[in-house]
Image (cartoon, rainbow, N blue to C red; front, top):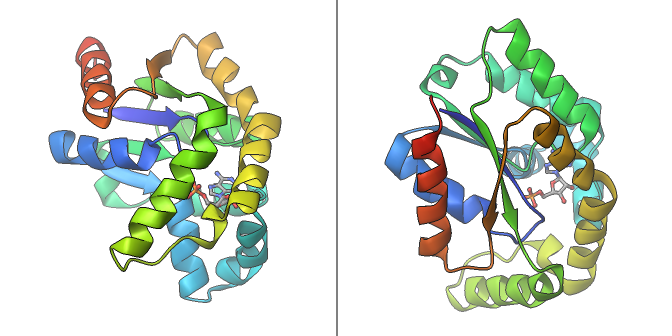
Length: 196
Ligand code: AMP
């Protein structure tokens, strides 16, 4: 199974990806997680990405495409994958098409978590409070002002990705405002109807 999870920051892509990994044993590719690891390790990519991520804007396409292209070469990719947070621009979506085509693979489905943007700010504020209460690190970019910049980046750049997959007949939409378990069930229903 090869799938892309789409939706704005705070839509629940990471949460749903975690649940799907348990069910399907897929590789979870989150460019946000990969970039945060690069920042923590102070790699050249991390050093370049840090200020951009802290500001809530998008890391250049070439950097993110480079990370994904490298990861695609690993042997575990044969198990299938969930892409979360990538592609985020039309150029990234086209690069992914290219990557898949050159390795003779294809996407099975792109699932968009459709959410009410107005409710996302309070949802992410809650995520930060919960993390704080649990003694976990709070993401700097979950600060309400930076989160608004991330949302704006989504509506400016990433809304071009959904039509890309609609045109390819791969887009499926799920109500992302439903409970975590209901969203998970809807995704499972879609995956059951997709021929892996
Ligand atoms: P996320 O964890 O997916 O919300 O990503 C956190 C941050 O990493 C984003 O606000 C961007 O700065 C950066 N980032 C993650 N994925 C991408 C991507 N595909 N393209 C550009 N920037 C990205």
